[in-house]
Length: 260
Image 1 (spheres, rainbow, N blue to C red):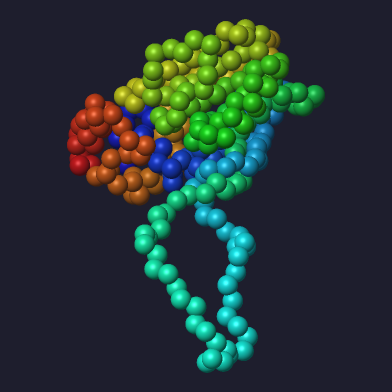
Image 2 (spheres, one colour; image 1 turned 30 degrees about the vertical axis):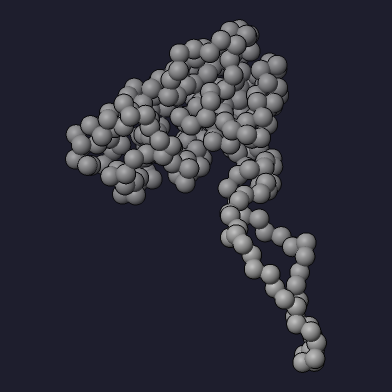
């Protein structure tokens, strides 16, 4: 059964599911672009690795203080130590830990020179919050200051949009096409939950025709191939949460498809 939604399926944004969707979409983009760009260009899947503080993880390490039992039994004459009553129970808190983040992205390179012509980023939750956002914005700015085109695909409602000089009207999702030869001007494709994911051009060198990528078709294929219709429980509400108006729309769509 295909996805019941006309555009982005909000259930794919679930934190436990998005990393798989992200990786499958990266591979799907590489597979659909490669035959269109050969032999002049090659499409490489690259990986960015960095450490951030504050992801969901457990602190595992050596304690600063250990308490050990004595090796030999103590004499009964040893004075017993009184233990004071603890008036309050402890509360559970979180401590900052460092966790390694691995993110895949695409680079379109001129085969003869290995010059990076276009970088394609599909944003992850880490790119939009905390220290991970800071690190991504630094990398993003390096690309924007270079001769490399940038395609930035944001299919996540959670987190503030990445910065632009002028912020447009709010939207659930957005795709940015920043051509190096037209900066600071760029093309932004904003769209909402009820709309199809737009097809977008992939910029190349000036003399070459830009291929158009049907992201909606790729997401539909990923949904089908992954069997998500068997694993997603549409009786529950999506995570991250939707607004009340969006929840009403989702409820109507799912009821229309007999999933509620």
